[in-house]
Length: 372
Image 1 (cartoon, one colour):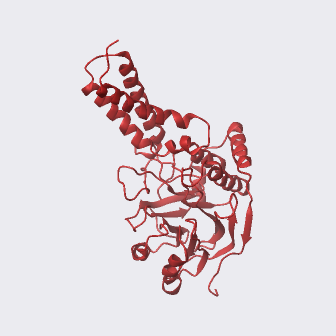
Image 2 (cartoon, rainbow, N blue to C red):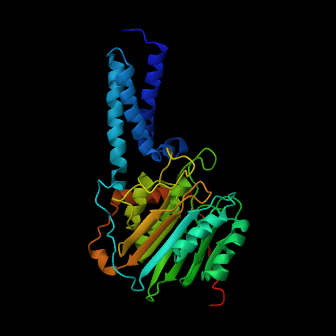
Image 3 (tube, rainbow, N blue to C red):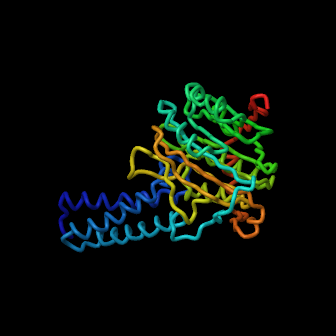
């Protein structure tokens, strides 16, 4: 066996990193140290390929250990690309594009994690003024942000609101030009983590249901496990499946679109993802171009078509906002395929919900309509 130099050992350590990062998420464990590697799959794929190139360029001998890890890295590269392939143009779009005129069934929205300490509110207000969405959702918004956003009610016609100013990074403000009813502020898995559920009336007079979410992520600084996040998403998915409403779900879900939980949420709820077949639409981290992934989402029922979806420019936050415009089209339900959960996946969802021991506290009619 040849003696390895320091450079050889350093290269070997580098070869191990993407292999470990690929294997850990395969373990069915909710601790953040396993779930965190669900996020950077594009980056892991890039590092795997880089490792193969470096091993080929730097190695002066064909030791089996390096050959084996070169092959493993090629396998990791292929696996990671497969996991994110649905969010590239190599895949067929899951949602049909609507190219017709607005017939009163169109709804547009902006969802933005503003970052509580961010003071560049003018950037977000400028984008709202430009796109004039029917609905605006802000996340991490506190009392200061509520004061800055008051102009939306006074001057821009957002007369229906749900306001939850908090200084714990989980504040939430919903502004709508379209009428709301049966609005609820929910604390389903934790007393200090709210979400919003409401019915919203389209200009056609038809009512749809909306859910605004911002669960806590698995990380060493916030939640040790993904248990609460997963349970909240699956509770919403289960309710959607039971009620069979026309639905929009949006917000910062603190999960990537390709994770096992996101896939399970889609199967349980029957919702579609307009990004599939169109791109990654990465929104976090706004400050680090090489370390970005899609944390801010818009899902919808199969009776909607997509007119437009895009990531908007920087607003001073660590997230980019997302703009989406959708057409309510009940006829599309017959041609837009949705995945259904099998018995094993339904059982997995029940177990994840039970593990979180959700509190399911609901505050009803927590909204204002400014006298309308």
